Image (cartoon, rainbow, N blue to C red; front, top):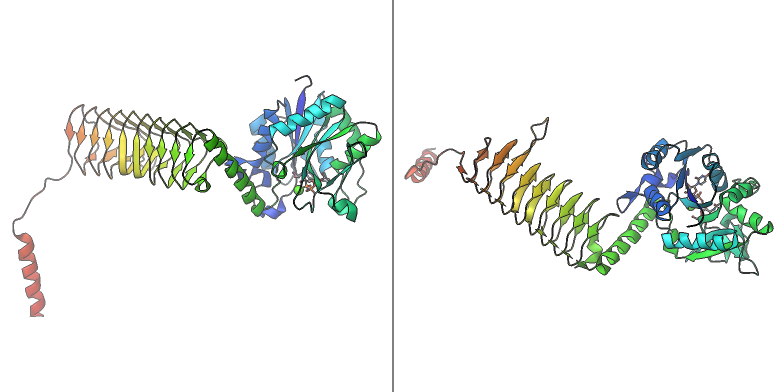
Length: 450
Ligand code: UD1
Ligand code: CA
């Protein structure tokens, strides 16, 4: 990479159509705020400086950007007077920057790194500008890319300002633009707001650049590359695009999805080859699954690791900090939180295992639970290797059950159990011979007497 790269991410729009207390760019696609998709795209092409332009109405956007990128990463555009005005708001923050700038939108999560690279390359070859364009099925509302005789971009005309002939053009402006920083700000200083919206349009720099003898390139992408989110319906559309891509990528990487359309991924889901996933599985953030594991239907995982050859579900829930070793088995209606399972340990039915370390080969019976929370603090349960936890055992943490130990079904375990011991804590059973028949007879006589 010869020249330094910076990114300006526009995120000062009101996002009113979302009808949300949460700023639009903080709404998530694939479990990641849209703004972070744009930031990741900028980082992905090696931007050394990233400036997010925010609105006064949404300070949380700036806080998010600073939290993610460090002090100075957010500037406020107040009031918002158009996309050109928004880019100018970043001028001060990039005053000492010399190099190329890519302009991205905080509400357009899918601009591929390859397209941005193509834009940098087109720019580098000529010293001019590059714009990412796409053919829209329905171009209504988009700015149109008007090509000159030379095949270069002559200007961009906004839909509202376009003539009928210009509106017939299907080639649209994605909004993504690449220029040398100094040139960009020099051109923006010449932009006025004489247009139907009374705004300072970023798009106007194209005609100014062309008039000044700079070459203006179009890099073509797919419509989905430019997908922008303005409403909940478009957010759902973006989510669908992400999920479709994630499912295809998983299958291409060697994962079997029995019903791809019912499996939901997060942006950071990692699944190794030869994992089989049955229908209706949701991956929250931070899930890793190793080779050869099988995920049965109706599971929900968040921040969990599943070891090689493990079997999970149906109907299992893995919450943050669940770490399953090789060939662990977690069966139906089992919830695991912040717990490790050693190799071949299992909890096959109806259990809650929280804040625990379960040794290799241990078996947790149906209905067993760890009582890890007393309303104030959480405590750990340690279950030794090869231990056998009887059905319906309640383990009151902090407590440890020794290696190879047994607990009797229905026991409430409040004291540590030594290795190899049996712990039983329940009332002894008494049988009263004939009691039931006598009881029924007495009740029947009472009723007859009434
Ligand atoms: C813009 C482009 C249009 C393009 C379309 C693609 C201009 C003038 N028009 O139109 O050519 O086809 O995007 O979606 O650039 N923003 C600010 N401050 C502002 C105004 C906007 O930060 O003062 C941000 C918004 O938050 C948004 C982005 O800029 O992320 C685009 O703004 P928007 O108002 O949606 O532009 P469009 O009219 O859709
Ligand atoms: Ca828009």
